[in-house]
Image (cartoon, rainbow over all chains, first blue to last red; front, side, top):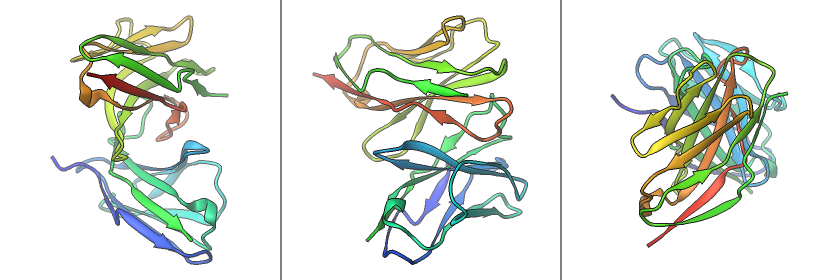
Length: 114
Length: 115
C-alpha cells in the first residue's frame, strides 16, 4: 500500500504571495491532518479534515485554510505569506482520526518565504 | 490543558545498548492515545509505537517498548540494542478522545548512537 504523498517537496515564495500544498492520504484513510513544524514552535496542529469537512482546527490565523476532496485528497492554502510561515508542513492520514487511530505522515513540504 | 513534556533535549547511547527516552503528559481526559514517532534528518515522521489509556500491558514493537505508568502520567520509550540508524529526533505525542485528528507533540529528544 502506498504511503502518504505530499507535493511539492520544496517551495520558495516571497512575502505576500500565496501557496497551495497538496496531500494524498493512504488509500482508505478518510482523516487528513496538517501540521506546521518550525525550530522555535515545534510541531503544531493546523486542522483536520474528514469526509470533506473541517472537523478540528488549531490556533492559526485565517490565512491558513484547507479543503478535502471526495477522494480524501487534501490541499492546504496559505495566503499573504509572511516570513514566519517558513516551515516544514506535514500532512498525516488515518482511518478515522479517533484517539486510538495511528496517523501516518508524508515526507513534508519545506516552504521558504523570502 | 493537554500537554506533552520531553525533558531530554539530547541523548547519547553506545551502539547495541538500550536507551530510555522520557515523556510525561497531562490531560483531564480518560480516553487518550500516546504515540512515539521518529524523525530522521530527512524530515519524515515515522510511527514507532502506540499505547492506549485503557491498555493494561505495555506496548511492544520489535526493539521498541513503551513503559506506561498511568498514575505518574508517563510514557517512556525504550529502545533496545541501539543501532546507528536509530540516530534521529524522537517525538512523544498524545491525542485525546475529544480532539479528532489532533496530535499534541512534545519538543522532542535528539538521540545519537555512537559506534
